[in-house]
Image 1 (cartoon, rainbow, N blue to C red):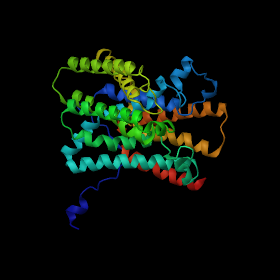
Image 2: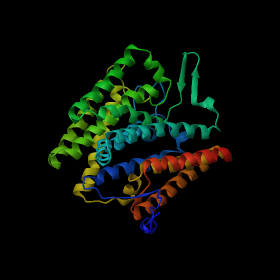
Image 3: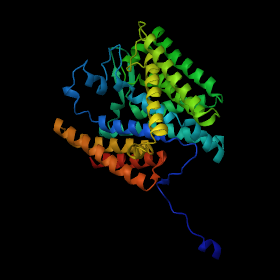
Image 4: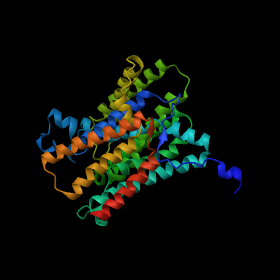
Length: 379
């Protein structure tokens, strides 16, 4: 080793990254993402579940209907909203990685992220059930199905992988059309094949609902994000077209939902469910555009949650899983746990926000994978 090499400052290993102000980064997207993550933290434990009656306004806001329901609630839109808000920056992140490295590296990073999310989803299930591998599948003997257990992380991981080939369609208009055809194909399969019955026995439509409808939501979001970030239209025209897209999705979804067999159902992830979800999400995002562009609101608390969504999600899951694995919580305990989750995630996110740093997705996955494994041995 030469003297110059010895004197050269050594690079420090850091598990956080500084927040770089990107000229194309839109504050209202981070604000909206932050609201979704905050709502996830608030509703994770659901201490009010036993006190909410079906058909009430509170039920519409905080509960999923049962598997036979032919309607959807506002709470059903939570998972598609999580997918959509992360999908908005899909193309921007992919293009930036491709420009910095190369196309192969950008593709590999997306694949790695999707696979890690799938694996982490199952790891959390194994931790929750003391590494009993039998819980990973549900055996529906009477139906002749073996159904993998499925949750939000699995959906996000698989939807990321399925959306990747669509990103290779360069024109956002054609990509958008392809996404709707993809979701419509699933609706046709629901009607004419046994997939519909299979999906009714799962959550989020299981693998098929994610493979078609939720991945379609991600691709629609990626196409809209591509249009917003990468076209030279005026902001007014962009947001007007965004409003039109949201309104079309909502109206067409509501009309299709009147057709027998096409009703909006989260359980089987019908086409109308996807369209209504997209309509509500896109139109709701325009509120954040108004708050940001017209009112000039910073909404720093929401930005703190929105800058590192995966880290926030994993924090909330760890805080939720540990007490559930150790004790049987009463209703009072569930209320206390909800408060703890909100308090801890708020403090941690605000500390990162004040220091202008965030935890990258891949690092967050590694953090909580290690925590999950260590905790499983402890219990």
